[in-house]
Image 1 (tube, rainbow, N blue to C red):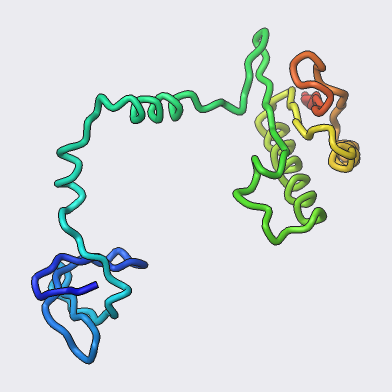
Image 2: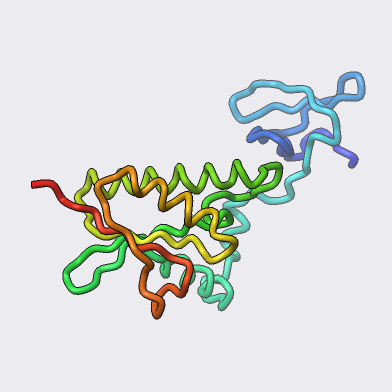
Length: 180
């Protein structure tokens, strides 16, 4: 890319914006708004034609795609369900719900993340005196379910398969006993 003195530029991997003020040893000299000067190679810079606040003047707020996105954000599902004056916390233990990516993790690591999450949520329910909790673990080979049941046996709780009608075969409902 060919830069000229006076061009507005932004740094690719940083939050620095400024104006090209000169060139030095095949490097571009950029001065930011506070007067600080930096040296960058040309491939680290991007030319800015218009500032973002200038572009936002032309944004169509009646755009149907924008309205769909805003509508999707408002419909975020709560972790808690309220049925018959009873609060029930739902925890989905599927790996893709807990982590952005499972790349580089083996099954043991993923299982440990799932069990740590289950333990944290269970202790939260005990602390906040939430009496019902549903772990959605899926059907699979049953490893997570059996490990989850082993974990639940260490606590003062009772557990059983959750409603087949509501969750299918892959969920465990936990009742937390409340100490007086």
